[in-house]
Length: 515
Image (cartoon, rainbow, N blue to C red; front, side, top):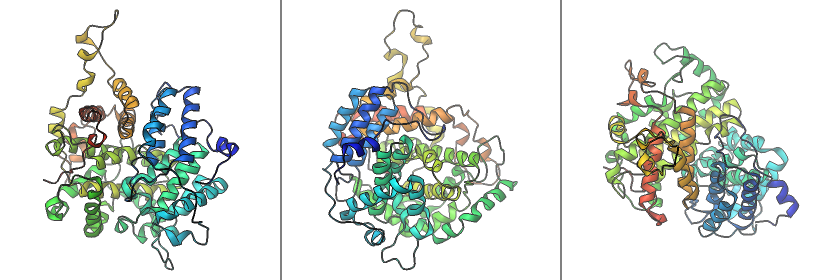
């Protein structure tokens, strides 16, 4: 890492600011001036001392997760003394930053994509670009333009949008943290590092983004409007089901045997990296089919309400994949009660940032971003075994109030209601556990689920019932879905991680759903 002066560090890492939009994840009470100073100091140290990549596969088990963990805990109201403890834990999971040895210029920028030995060079390059041009401009030019993805004269495939979602969405997540907290240093590290990571990430799922996606951006809004006029669609301006719903798209995949684990020949595994060949196989064999089934899931980026509704669909879909599929496949999990799949979990944590991302994007880029994200989410679901959604059984068996939050676990004080009438806010102990736990993924997952609950928790049972009408395919039991889903899943998550004790390797399941 290039040397940074104290003056520049102070400019890059001021105290965290408010989120860029009221629809972005909320901050919990507990944030103080002292906690702002503490998190900023930890971020400075991480910026100077640690490297983002931690192994030869490019997984971000520590480096980038240090800033993720710090900021997630900060947003949950962690006290100042927690941040040093978080950073000390994360140091053991990272490797030191290195000096820039290979320079990247505008002329050589496209020549070394996917080569992690140029990581520091890309980081320095993007640091300069973002500080001069601004975050939004850099994102549009280097990720969402046609030339950044398809270029006839390119020696190395560019496909920057593909790279943006590579390795479990991590470049996107990194970028969004920088945008959400409005810190120039996170724009020079998280956002810029996100862009730099985009440049040095491998090219995954090239078939899920086509040249026509960029050529059709200008007409996407017109097609979305026409779809909303279709009388066979669910068309209610006071209801989020405008056009083809994400649940309808998922039902199509469940009805097609081409996407089954047995047809694809997917088998169980015990290591994270062993999931990548499955993911690549899905891309190689089924990209065209995924594009076909998602073609009519459209987003009008010029309509803020429509964009918000499509983001909501994605949040529900990701939670179903992680929570309901995880409970349905519990016997394939390590402890037999909940298969808290490491890969589906990242669908939940990445969904948290969709609103933050679109806040900084042009309407056409917002549409392309969300549509591409949905394709990637589906590809991971299929590569994990395309597990079904046993919604009816889930609601019958999984309590709304998590076991660890039941009234009999509370200590009653004088003046409190008796146990039998206690109305506990179950989110409070779940969030407290997340702040104090050493696993960064728990903190991020519970924060995401809590945000979804704050946004969509009031949805009643029957809210999605209209999706079962007509001849469109639908998910069984969808009429039972309500806003308690997020708390139920958060409770399962807390119980499962707690069951692993202190063994970090056992916190999350990686075996998949290959039965």
